[in-house]
Image 1 (cartoon, rainbow, N blue to C red):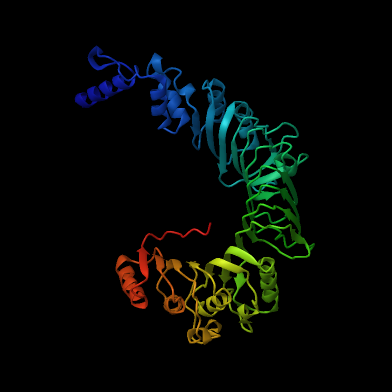
Image 2: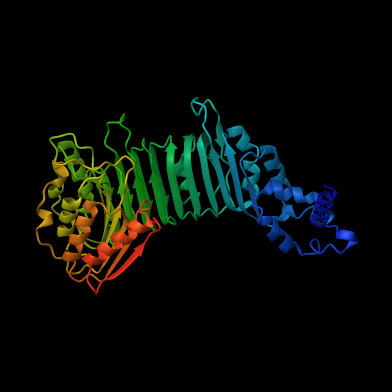
Length: 491
């Protein structure tokens, strides 16, 4: 026991800057930048601050850190004290994690951070909030971050009041997640060029209190709007915008009025519009540079209501004569009877070079729908097939409607330009293999096939499927297989 205690005393002596046996303290003799690099490895500001007790040499080293990380459970008074004592030339990164933090807790340190931060703020609040309305819990007044380059706020439905004045002069990235917005200042006022002249990337996800949103920006390059269910009016004037994603917006069932959107983005390259679309109320200006389009999921079988929804989704793609890459999402709704095959109502697609098919088949055959899409885009050079499996997927029963129409299994199709095929999430089901086998026959000039097996496939099963797929192939085709359960990118 005494030997163990002696060993610990020697280790603490070295850590405290006192050499064993009165030897030289070489650690404390290191220059500040080396000591700062050591403390940064801790990624925990309170722990780094406690090194000040080791020796006089360490007393103020932690205050020179350019990055401060406060993990869950850090007392807000300690965060405020650390920011007040911070003495580095620049605070490049501030990360604060909280559980059920209230506006009062965040207000203890946020104004100081706004004055000192010149880099990135990431504040993430987690945990179950009480059921009281956000207004009754109070609201957090966001200060103006004049020097910050990036701000990420994930507030878990904390109420937020935006600053009525001031410029976010250097802000290039802003991400707002799970926030209840309160007036009088609107998000539209804050993020437009007059107050965010350098903003390049904006992401607004699951934010409440945003029924109308207008942005006029000369600098914005990327805009993501996600899960804004109560949004009813959207106006975008962004001359430099290159990437726009609108996902699950305009979906409030209590609002029966038609959503209105006006998009002016002449430099747009990528458009992902998975929200309500009606060409009479959702208007796009000319987009001569558009290269990639993703639309609402298309239901393969259904009745008149589903057919009308498909029609609106297809109308967006039909606005364009040529697009380099089109991503279609094919989705199975539960079959209840009296459904019909809806894909034949798709009569026109843009001229495309690359086709991305995301298939949520839920255990059903998707050969007929894939065949129909490929028949209408026979000039493609690349095909990416993403097979998405739901946990509740079941094997369809004999006589299921998904077996119709069955002509895709015998009808000839030539894809003379198709050179590359990438398949992700292959589980080796009968439906999947039937389509893949036909693909080898249709693509007469195929050069490369990349297959990533689903992560449920064992190595032995993967080898069995690999041999089967090789038997479908031809000597001139380069086959590549992966067993990592990864995801092919559609970006």
